[in-house]
Every structure is written in C-alpha cells, then in structure tokens.
Image (cartoon, rainbow, N blue to C red; front, side):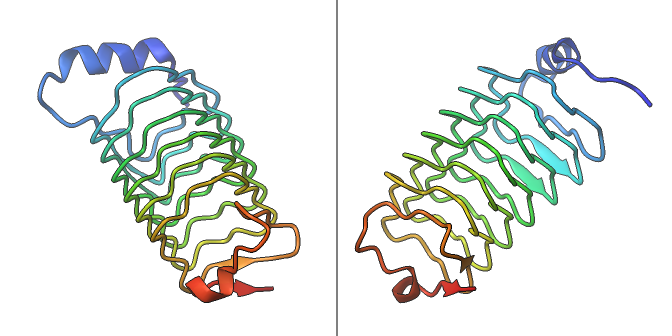
Length: 169
C-alpha cells in the first residue's frame, strides 16, 4: 500500500491551479494537513484517521463516508462543507467553523466541538452521543433525528435539543 505524506499533498496542490483536489479511497492516516488550503476537495471513503487539519481551510469540501476518527480539526474552516456519513468519532473540532455545513448521518460520538460554529448547519440523523458541544454556536442548526445521550454536553444548561428535533437515547 502506498504511504501518502504532506509533501504528496503540497505537490498535488501546486499542480492543481484552478482544479479540484480529489483524494478518494486513499489512506492518509496521521498525515499533517495543518494550515493547508484544500477548499473544494472531493473525497469518498477516504481514511484521514488521526490526521492533523488544524487551521486548514476546507471550505466547500465534499467528504462522503470519510473516516476522520481521532483527527485534529481545531480551528479548521469547513464552511459549507458536505460531510454525509463522515466519521469524526473522538475527533477534536474545537473552534471549528461548520457554518452552513451538511452533516447528515455524521458520527460525532465522543468528539469535541467546544466553541464550534454550527450556525445553519444540518445535523439530521447525526450521532452526538458523548460529544462535547459546550460553547458551540447552534443558531438555526437542524437537529432532526440527531441522537444524543446523558454524556452529550450542550452549549448552555437550558438548551433543549428535543425542541430542535433531536432524540435522547
């Protein structure tokens, strides 16, 4: 199996002026993408487990069924991202910008979304069990069918996820 590195990505980005970066069905486990601009990237069933995307610009990315378990996305910009069925189990999304992101059926179990901006995000059927959303901005976020449990931490003590359509398990 080919081992991919940050240098592989930087080389690809340098050759793609005005073109879309496509990293589908590849293994990028543990690679450092911190600070890179990978806007509009397309990924399908790609492994980014334990990868570092801190401070990365990922505006408009499409990551369907991508594995980002344990990844670091602290302060990453994922505005208007399409992340259907992505796995963020145990990932660090502290301070992440997910404004207007599509997060349908995303697995956020045990993830840290402390201070994340989820304004107008669509989290229908997302799994939020044991996720930490303290200080997160959930203005107009859609939680229909999202799952949570007693371990889920919400932005404020009086936040009522049931009123936004979420279900307690």
